[in-house]
Amino acid sequence: MNEYIRQDDEEQIRAIFPQAGFEVVPSSGHWVHAEAPRPFLDHLSMFLNELKL
Image (cartoon, rainbow, N blue to C red; front, side, top):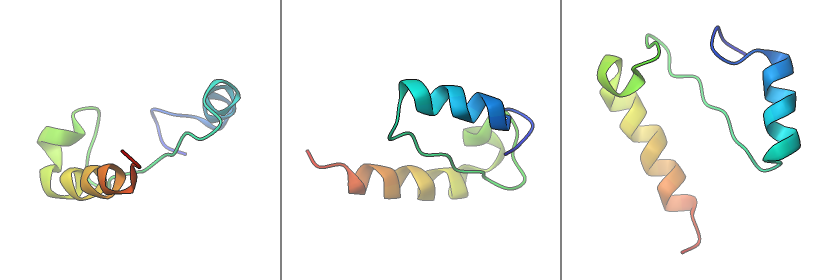
């Protein structure tokens, strides 16, 4: 998937959190909010808007 979450990591995460979603933000690293703030906020906004609260 990327250098932080490998395929076997994803499988283990989905075993615990079956509805987990994954997003890759290009041109970012571990500090995605600081390295790519606009794409990060776009993904976060979409996620929050999809919550059924």
